[in-house]
Amino acid sequence: MLKKHTVVEKNSVLMLIFVVIVISIGGIIEIVPLFRMETTIEPVKGVRPYTPLELAGQNVYIREGCYNCHSQQVRPLRDEVERYGHYSLAAESMYDHPFQWGSKRTGPDLARVGGKYSDLWHVQHMIRPQDVVPESIMPGYAHLSHKGANLEDIGKDMTALRMAGVPYTDEQIANAYNDAMAQAQDESDHHDGLMERYSKVNARNFDGQATTTEMDALIAYLQVLGTMAELKDYTHDGTKRSGQ
Amino acid sequence: MSDNQVEKDAVSGVETTGHEWDGIKELNNPAPRWWLGVLLISIIWSIGYWVVYPAWPTLSGDGERGGTKGSFGWTQYSQLKESQAEIVARKAAYLDRFNAASFDQIKTDEELYAFAVAGGASAFKDNCATCHGTGGTGSAGYPNLLDDDWLWGGDVNTIHETIRAGVRANHDETRFSEMPAFGEMLSGQEISHISDYVLSFSSGAAYDGEGKDLFEMQCASCHGEDGKGIRDFGAPNLADAIWFYGGTKGDIMSQIRQPQHGVMPAWEARLSESTIRQLAIYVHSLGGGEE
Image (cartoon, rainbow over the protein chains, first blue to last red):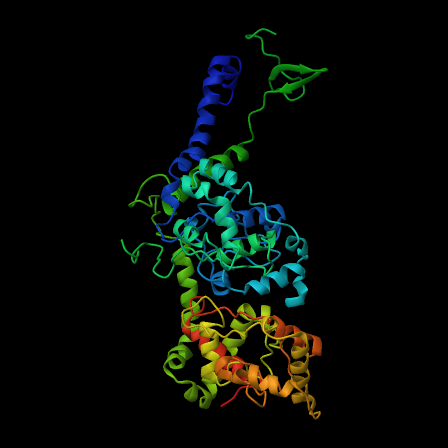
């Protein structure tokens, strides 16, 4: 049998058929599960797409390479759950493109950082991390305070994300700029619309400056991380699924 | 070379494939037996793995979540539960008693008190040290927890409440107070007078100027006539030479003109009640705890 390969090697049609069979096996095993991705997403309530300002913050997060040192994935391991809180669910990153998972951490995991620190702490920490955490090796990001957030185009980002499956509505996309500006203000005529279009929004002047900066956007993003999903009644096997 | 005339290598006696590159001919050796064996064993192993562990997300096994479950019934979540149960069992000797005991009872029970302080110290490092410092010394804008100067009160119940609901936090029962921005109401001259008077509380220097009347009119309702603060409003003591946002005259004037307000997050949703109680006892034990 071991010498039969000459048959395949000398008959190109037969060779082609075998090649197609082998590649199909590998391809089907890798691709088919992607068509059934929804079966891996837990039925947990509360997860919504990012608001335009949070999305602008995520863009800053990705541009500045925060993911090089910070992951956003609390793994179901005892030590991580002790330190960071409930392990991350697939549902919590279903609107992330690209996702921010990882296990390589130079800084702490940020999947549950939302609400853990005050806005002022974040501002000080971004400007010079060692002012609040003397032993930190994180570089400063003071320039974010001086640069206006890029909100003119944020509606286009949302349109692109909609193509990738994030359920933004036409109304949300049309009002993207106003919603983004309103979220970074203590008071705004557009607050009601923002609250109507997105649930549980933190709307306030995050960095304390009059203009809406990249700092506002980034802190708005950080403050919502890990706070959307209603995890109180969540169990892995679905025994206590709330309201179902 | 024709098909029926296979050339054999003269040295090894193995047939060649008939391919020749620059005079080098390829021998038609089969793949090594050991290699083939490893390949086949791996394939068989993988089939066993599919059967035993959860492997196929696509195949609907159970409800909308789908996926094969594996005959061992293993999941990473059950593994997590098991490893957590280990800790719970280790703590059980104390935790039930701790949860049932009041702060007063814990204080008199040496073992429980040590348990609470140890648990609180560990939770403090994870959650509180980023603002209050690893040792609780605080920094500008973040209170020092080692001294006896408290904004909202330093007995263990008050500390517990501050941790639970936070200050100016996203919580229905959070502590809240806001000093008005006097820059809009008073002239620079008046603010300067008040600052001089405020500084005289702690320096002990005799003060005889307009600041006293202004202070009593504008500030005393929250900070008290003697400037010692009123904890119900979270109004700081101005007479103890401990300054939250700086103690120079410029710092004080700026705080009167356009006050900064710190925010402490509420921890009720994030930490368990038991952890919050341990934290309260730990913070209370740091040095400035009041009865």
